[in-house]
Image (cartoon, rainbow, N blue to C red):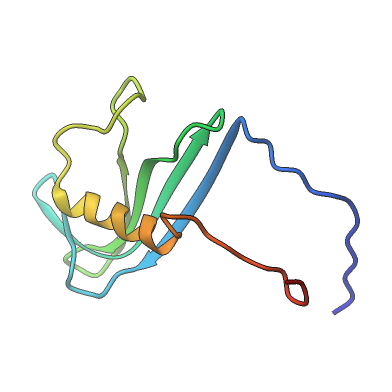
Length: 118
């Protein structure tokens, strides 16, 4: 591979987002929208930290299959309409997906050392 890179990347801390993808075991999560069931097989959870505030989960985008096997995307907004707290009335299973994503992202902090550096 012929690749080069220069510079010192800096992250803007005013609004940082992280998306965590989860492959879901088939048959473990069913989403029902307008009376129709969808078998979720992937979830993409978006977390954000605005102005160095604590991380919050903003939304989950599910990839699912309908009863006829047709793929469908279902997006769930996790914040209320004023964006200052969790949306009331969401099923507990949705919050379990968020918790799994947070845990897999290192809820207590991700540590990483570049290869060849200690």
